[in-house]
Length: 112
Length: 110
Image (tube, rainbow over all chains, first blue to last red; front, side):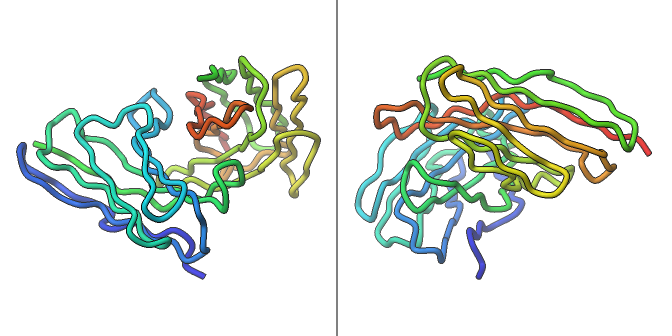
């Protein structure tokens, strides 16, 4: 049982480049979400999805896009990377929005 | 959204000591979890505990929802307990946005 799988684990981007962070879960969870973790800030929610075809913004959505075409996958897109997006990104899933959440191993992104 | 405050922000222990970490939240909640982030950055689920008490080995947690706090107890601490402990909660009333505390950084010396 793989749980929540994030790829890549590390990435360096130049300012203005675009990329997609991948997240997949094999637990048939309805709720998936993306967080960023910055030093001293805890985790902050970027976007979330309560099911295939349904997404919504979290606390810090600017600069990021998401889509949810299948239950399993919830990719996060950076359209034009900025140094302020240097962070560690975590994907999480749970059976429902209000149940136990499980996290992927994180993606460390550096924008230069 | 709700406010989540964790205390203490930093904790240094000698191996074998016991400790209590606290999480206060500003409103009624129906979802509370404790996580351990190890030195490699991995987030590990410790407890899903919106109310009541749970125990798992040397760790236990208690949430008193009516008084808006949760406690994480670590007994006979080991160096592998080092890392950052986060609590996260979501307000009652259907909010989909959880709030994380800023964490307690724990260092356990041998």
